[in-house]
Length: 80
Image (tube, rainbow, N blue to C red; front, side, top):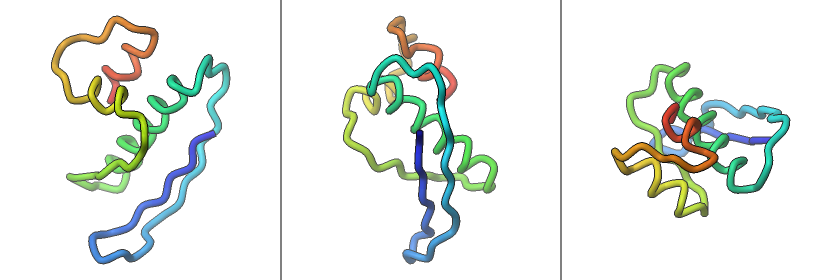
């Protein structure tokens, strides 16, 4: 399950969303799915910039590189 909360720059609550993921093989994959859902939420809200807070440095680094990720989460990273 992924839980997301969106605030604007002044700290005003914009929305809350929960998404149920099935067949998630590890917490590492779950972290990648959370980032994907946050990006999709930002797009659906018409936002041009989102800041994602979390603790999975590996996922963040993989999202920032232009090289294709060939790990088990490569497809999720590609979607992000």
